[in-house]
Image (cartoon, rainbow, N blue to C red; front, side, top):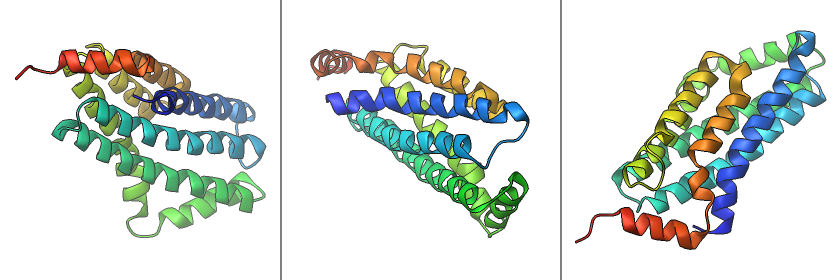
Length: 199
């Protein structure tokens, strides 16, 4: 795994966590957005999605690009696209609106377009975590990740969906789940090679 790929597995969750922290700060007055905090937080996660996409591709490659890891990569990639659309809309409406009420109205107008809410707000975010779970599960089966890595990914997903204020904790769990992949390319390649069945 290249240094760039390794960094992506670090920066993605870190920027996800940064979004969560900024979101908490933005809500201290009881209202989230529009404003600098809203835009900055959403930009953090939007950039983070780019690193997540790189990370998914790197995890697929580390797993040998087999059926399960490929399914995880494509599912996660679809989730990245959906969330990128969602967060881009949030940034745009935040810049267009002068108040939270106006911003919410603009967002609802977008969501009212047939298929939008289903694709970008319901299924898309779910696929983002399903993809990670499949990739972590496959790498755990290959003993490249610890057996508890998929459990941490699942916990991060459940926490995020159940209570968005726990996004920073979810980001920490994702960092812990993928921490072995931060090793040097040589040691990771050796770990992957040794974990695969011999012919």
